Amino acid sequence: MKAIVIDQPGGPEVLAWREVATPEPGRGEVRVRVRATAVNRADLLQRMGLYPAPPDAPQQIPGLEFAGEIDVVGPGVTQWKAGDRVFGLVGGGAYAEALVTHADCVARMPPSLSFTDGAAIPEAFITAWDAMVTQGRLGAGETVLVHAVGSGVGTAAVQIARALSARALGTARTAGKLGRAGKLGMDRGFEVQGGKFADDVLRATGGRGVDVILELVGGGYVTEDLACAAPRARIIIVGLMAGIRAELDLNLILRKRLQLNGTQLRSRPLGEKIEVTQTFARHVVPLVESGALRPVVERVLPISEAAAAHVAMAANEGFGKLVLSLD
Image 1 (spheres, rainbow, N blue to C red):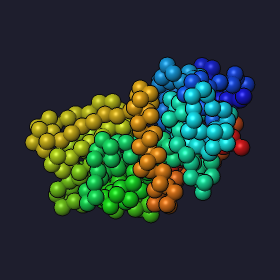
Image 2: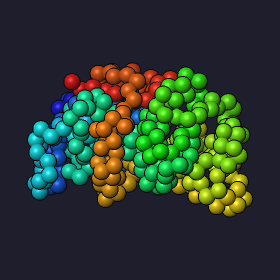
Image 3: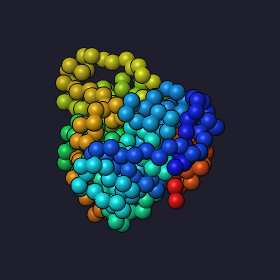
Image 4: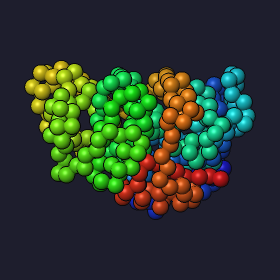
């Protein structure tokens, strides 16, 4: 088969589309013929040598999500057959014509979805649901603040909040992204200048603050999060684009009885990955099938143009997902 391979850390130019060995499924595994994948920031970090794949994933082939068809089922697999249309998350290896994963780490893709739309769903919607709903316990009538609202996870989070009858606020660095997020169901948006947004959020919530914060930026944003969090709010830290350090007012954490959770999907053990996939299949996929949730695709490129897709993601100018097609 062919795959995008990182032979050495570096810029987008190190991504090479070449022949590699086709993986074979073992017991309890399936092989998927990948029809489309999508670009994630983790792929860029892996390419630069800053975020290696977990030990059970291909080390030189990036790619965290896929949409395609079951190609071969391994011994002991009874729930899938060749030709089934599926999508899901992997620790790496999705920039390829085929990948192998555990049979319980794939979900059935709604028949109405194209492969390119399907590939834009798993990472964004699994991450958003797991952080915001499973860990953040967002419920109807509550308010969530979604940072980087124009990102793949951000666009998914706004839609999930709307589906749960929660109020979504969002931040971005451009007014254009806020306008587009408003069409997805975001109630209020804030264009962040100089890393400050807490005062605006407090004004928008009548001084109360927000119940859940989906922190996709990190760094100094966390300092502001504490200031605009409501009593007993849950802050879920997912991304660190703004850095790994922040100044925290511990008195605010104590006085407001706040919870700060850090989360990462890629490094979780297999059992937990199966759990989030099954939660996705039970709760998120039916909402996609009904039309309540939909993928937001900025652009589709052929897999051979993966380097151009990495350049586009690094520029932070897109809205939603960048998808790579293998058809």
